[in-house]
Each structure stands twice: as C-alpha cells, then as structure tokens.
Amino acid sequence: MNDGRRALAELAHVEGEYLFLRFGPIERRYQLKNFSEEDHEYVRNWSTKARCGACNQPLTTRTKKAGRKSYHLACFRCVACGKGFRGGDRFQIDQWGNLGHVEHLAQLFDCDSCGRLFPRKGASRNQVLPDSRVACKQCRDDAVFDLEELKSIRNETTLILKEVGISPPEGAIEWKLVSRRELDNEAKRIHVGGNLKGLTVTQLRRVTSKSETTTSFSHKVYVLFGLPKSELRSVISHELMHVWLNERGVEAPADVIEGFCNLGSDQVLRQDPSRLAWILIGNMQTNPSPSYGAGYRKMMAHLQKTGWPRMLAEMKARAKKP
Image (tube, rainbow, N blue to C red; front, top):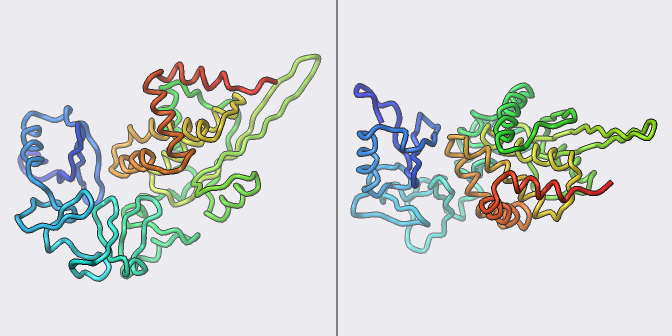
C-alpha cells in the first residue's frame, strides 16, 4: 500500500473482510471496506497469487507444502540449521510459517506469547525473561514491565467492556506484575491450577449495623510481567470479568465461569488491530481445555443467540443467595 510516492506498508495477509499490513516487524489488522477502490483492486490482485509462507512473495511452479502453507523451495528450510527439508524429514511449523526440524527443536526457542519459533543462537539476553520465559523479538519489544503502563491498558480495556454492559468494579483493585513463580504460588494458595497468566483474588467484607448490612469488595489481580500489549489486554479483560462475577456472587461450573471471562478477552482482542490479537482469538477457538476452550466456545455460541444484555442477566441470576 502506498501514497503514490513511497511504500507505507506491506500487505502481509488477507482473511475474509480483513487485511493485515506490515509496518516493519509489526502487522496490523484493518477492515477492507475502509480503503479506496484502488486499494480494493490491489488487494484483489494480490489475493489471486498464492504466497510463500516464509517470504510472502508469489509462489513459482516448484513449491513445497506444509500444513496450510506453501513455500518456495529456497524458503522451505529449518530456521535452526538453515538447511532445506528432504523427504522423510520430520518438522514442526508455527502459526507464523516458521519451520524447524524436530531434531533441532532444542536449538530453537518457542515464544511464550505468540508461539513463534526462533533460533536460540543469536537471541539477545533480554529475550529470556527473569523467570525463564522466552519472547521473540517482536513480543519482547512490545512487552510491559511497568505498572503505570499496565494501568493505562486497563483503563482502555475497562471502557471496551463497559460498552457491552460490564460495569467498572465497585471495589478497589490492587494490580501486581509478577513472575511465573509468584503467580503459581498465589494460585496454589487458593487451590487453583493451570498454565495461568493472570489471577484474581477477591475479598468480601460484610458489616452489619442497626439491622443494615453493607458489603464491600477488594481485589488483588496478579498478571505476569513481560507480556506483549495484545496479550496483556486479553489477560486484563479476562480478570476484569472475574472481578465482575465475584462482586455479584456468581457461582457456576468452571466451563461457564472461564468461558464467560474469555468472552471479555474476545471482545477486547477484536478491537486490537495486531496480528497477535487475531492469533490469540484463534487459540481460544481451538484450545482443547474443557474450561478455557470448550467453555469459551459454548458461551460464545450462547452469546451469539442471546446478545450481551440477556447473557449478563443470566449470569447475575446465578448469584449465590445470601
């Protein structure tokens, strides 16, 4: 895409009504309807040509296929050793089109946020986080370690959730950026398991005076440090949904609770233009977890039938009676 004088961005991917433009290492999602007819014609022509899963250039007659992607012969190679794959070679492919020999996976890092495979050799020190999680360059450059930056993203997320009826918390929230070990320890303390990236702990206080009872809430929300902004938005929105449920005393099976909270992540990610946000939505759609995956898909199907007002009313109806 260009302004008639210079290229502004590279068209990287087209999926339905959306296109992804690459600005340096970052890909952003846009709705095609917002572009000019000239741009529509460019996208139509671009889409008619099969593209290489590695370099994104048009494919020639000699290609190799892996998963849903096809590659130039020169691009069909291991990101660890640089050698091309031959018949019988076993390899792994990530969601970004990167390929690695199975026997060379020990020479590769797997980004904890986006799943991108990249060589250990040449990775910078700061790509291995203090708690031993690893981040590709793109996710590391976008990582959040500052509590003030987290709170700014939280404010944006709160407004998006408010649009569908998730009112801001009544009680105060203490936000904590923590390591994997700290998060896991907090989870064990309240008997919660799983590969968590966020955790909400709510305290309820009831005071009775002259036959009148008042209820107040306070919350601690633990979030892993070093998450890229798109993933952080997803985690924050999920935890804010937990806060909403906790303040209403909602009780339900795990698949209903976690599936509902992932609806908040979905709502926020769909307004995030990054390619990572799109991949995170796809991960929820294919997640095999009974709670976070199947629960999300069940609750999403119900939401599409009922809409947010009825969905929220139904969740409130699950509140534990005092």
